[in-house]
Amino acid sequence: MRVGIVGLGEVGAAMAAALRATGHDVLCLDARPESATAGKARALGIAMHADAAPFARAADVVLVTSQARWAAVLADWLVPEIPAGTVYADCTAKSVAVRDHIAARCLGHGVAFCDIAIADTVSWPDRKVELLVSGAATGAIASLFDGSRFMPRIVDASKPVSAELKLLRSVYTKGLTALIIEALAAAEKCGTRAEVQRTITAFMAEDFGRIATMLVGTSIKHAQRRAEEMKDVSEVVSALLGGAPMTHGTAMVFQALADSGICSDLATLEGIVSEIAESRVFERLGQSAPAEVAKPGR
Image (cartoon, rainbow, N blue to C red; front, side, top):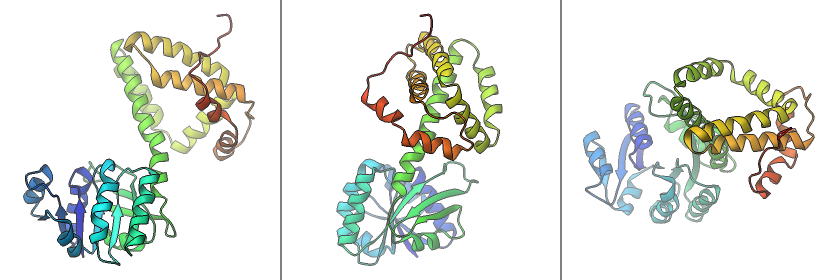
């Protein structure tokens, strides 16, 4: 199969290598002949196109792996040139609105659309990479990556929903990154980074489901006490780093949970999360300015 890739960054280059290794022909599009992408394509021996029309006609599948900010522009440029029946798969971390724009573009030109969310890092070459795929062309994408380290998981063949999955998953993955940065930077400033990192590593080595159930369940029960604790933590981190946005936000969430009246003896993580989702905890947080956590005796 002839696969046209738009964007030869980390993701695009990894996909190109995987597809070539499983026998597919790969070509690349970049209108700038002296760009880094063009240079990388030449180094990898990948056929390079500078014009959208011949590129689109030459590909059976078009994979867009550029930065998300270019996703809509690329679709507007490329899709009208793509023959009907060709697969157009967008792998960018785009917004839902942009995804819907691209899907409508494809539908209007008879192009089969697939929404792809990359759910793992591609930077470790020995690691399998899960792709959350949805939309009309999921079957074609599943076949395309068969035998490679990229593992498509069809989440909905009837409609594109992968952008939502990607963005909601990022609440955790990117939020966790910010928490790690804030915690370890503060620990570094006071000379305790190695020990703090050791204890976090040991704790996170436990089964995730078990940890999540325990953390969320006990946080409902002890929300007020933890809000007060995180206020103290915020003061310490702010003194070390000049600010503590993640810690301060955590204190706000715990205080909102403490004020919500949510039942503290629900048996499962699903039950607890469902109760929180149905409450107005986050709606109230979103409507109010950041508030100080009330502490007894202060």
